[in-house]
Amino acid sequence: MAKKMPRIQLIRRISLGIFLVAVTVLTILHQKVQNMPSIDALDPFGGIETLFKYLAGGEFIKKIVPANIVLLVGIVLLGVVLSRFFCGWICAFGALQGVFGWLGKK
Image (cartoon, rainbow, N blue to C red):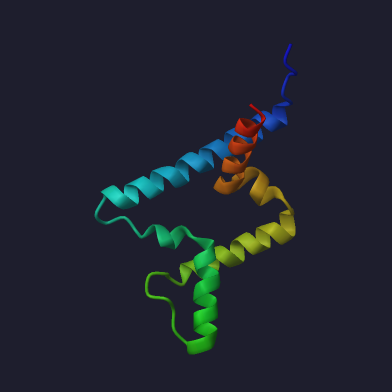
């Protein structure tokens, strides 16, 4: 008989699934809809690139907007304040890691 999953784990997996689906839908809409903002606008790593370019030359990367820096700062603050909460409950990569870990066990 399979072990019953604790309720908090079920809620965490649902949360990760929702964020994974949301990022996937936004990525698809970016390809299909004309006036959707660039998917690069949702990339916190673009904030690192933009920040380095801004510090080095005083300009932003054209494809990446200043909002990437705000997103990067927000994620770093979430990581510092809430520890592993972001990766365990929100990050779409965390969801993919869980799925692939489960598939690896199968």
